[in-house]
Length: 301
Ligand code: PMV
Image (tube, rainbow, N blue to C red):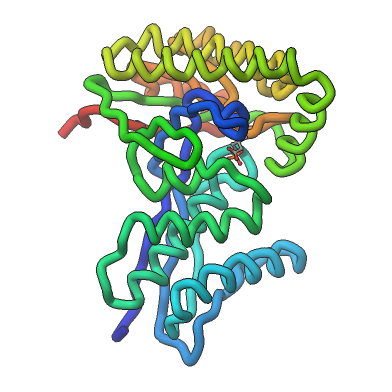
């Protein structure tokens, strides 16, 4: 390799189906415009330049995750550095995006065509270091860079005839996905019959939502999102900051609004809008951190 190369991994939003996806139900997820950029420069060995300001614990975890992937990619002699414009630990798939950016860069450095399957397998290795037993929806959506219906490790690309635009707003702070998933697992192990009913219903709502996307029916998709938020709330995955933002987005005209990702004490909330841009301008003036992204469908030239 003669000079610097780069690879990008987009973040993601889960439109429908988080948590149910861990139990084998489907989820509908799409890539967003923000993500992680990995850059490589020639070096004497394969290594990761740790981003400034990371704590020793996070640094050690990043290094372990990097080493797992580097080994599988044949340790190309590059130093990898990372840049991101994605809020971390908010439900937007920052670790999956990083895993895809790093895996893609290391595979590119071998000088052969990057195979999708290998890219996803390597990225999953890195994700395991952060999430324990991830469903795989985050890194798969990032690697495909398309709206996907994901279930048990398999992703089907879904095309929307209408532009599918979301407003993404940050509400409060949250804990790790690993902890939230583990707490939910404990509750469902204690009351399996009741929790199974709710997971089944989440699965049904995801399938309804996928049909709505195929039919170009944004109102039906929005309603599925609203019902999904109610089910997540029943699972105790919502909280006051999330609920307040959900209601704010609905009051601003969202066809549907819900938390996205693991949820908990806070995190990212998404609203489905035919035209989210004016609302972003207004909410920013009110001090809310938010941005828009188009997940699928035709784009204006
Ligand atoms: O909050 P995030 O971006 O880590 O999303 C996690 C999605 C879950 O369904 C909660 C977990 C998983 O492994 O699918």
